[in-house]
Length: 375
Image (cartoon, rainbow, N blue to C red):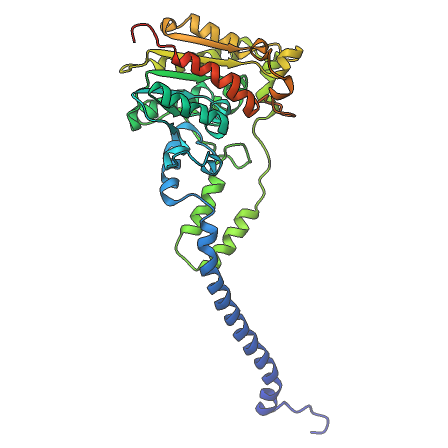
C-alpha cells in the first residue's frame, strides 16, 4: 500500500542503538574503574581518618565511665598535657602526678583540671610531690559539679582502689548553674542503686553531647567497603544539630536568680559529696573545700557566691571537724598585677596560668602540706 510507513529492520535498530550502547559501556567501565580507584584510595585514607579519634580501648573506657558520670575529659585531652606527664587511658577520668606514700586527690571542674593542663601548676605539683613524698590523683574535669564529683569519687574507690588521705574539692561559682541547669534532670541510679549522672541523649547539640563523636567512630569501625564508609562518615559529619543546652543560665544564680528551693537543692548536692568522701571504709583525714570569687564579685554585678552555700554545708555536716574551707578573695591577689589574675574576656573568670600557679595552687598546696591532727 502506497504511503505506508515501513517498520525499521532489526539491523537498522541495532545500528541506531550501537552508539548508545557504546556510551553506556564506556560509562560503566569508567564508573567501575573510578570506583576501584577510589576504593583503593579509601583503603589508604580510612586508617588516617580513624587515627584522628580514640583507640578502641579508649572508646570502651570512655563509654563505660561516662555512662555513670555524664562525661569525661575532652576527647583530645592528652594532646594538651605537659610533655613530661605520664599518659594513659585513665587520663580521661583522672591523672597521676608523682609517686609517694601519701595520696592526695584533687577534684573539681576546669579550675582543678588546670592543675594538669596548666603547665606551671603541673610542675608545681611535681615539685611538691618530690619534696613531700606525695602522689597526686587529679580528677579535675571541665564542668564537674559536686554531683559528678561524688560519682567520680565512688568510681575511683571502687574500680581503681584509690584511698586518698587528703581530698581537695574545688567548687566553682558556676557549679550552682551546672547543678540546676545541666545535671538536675540527668540524676539517676545504676543497677546497684548508686547515684549516677547520665550522659546526654538528646537530638539538639548541647555541651558534652557524646554520641555524635562515637557515631562517627562506629561508622569507621564497622565492616564494609572503605569508600562507602568514608562517604557515610562525611555525610554524618556534615549534619548540623540545632544548638541547645546551658550557657547564660550557668551564671544567672550569681546575679541573684537563685530561689530558696534551688539553693537548698545545690546545698544538698554539696552535702552528698561530703558524705561520699567520708563514706566508710575511708582513710581520709582532711577534706579541703576550695572556693574562689569571680571578677564580677568585685564590681558588685554578682550578689551571690557559692562560698555561702559551701560554708553552710560544712556547718551542718557531721564531718565538719575534718573539713577546711579555703575561700579565695581579692585580698589574695593584692600584691599581684591585676591584669595577670583573670584571663581576658573570659565570662567564667578563669585564672591565668601565672595566677593559678603562684597564688591558687600554692595556697592549696600549703594547706595540703599541713598535716591533720593525729597523722
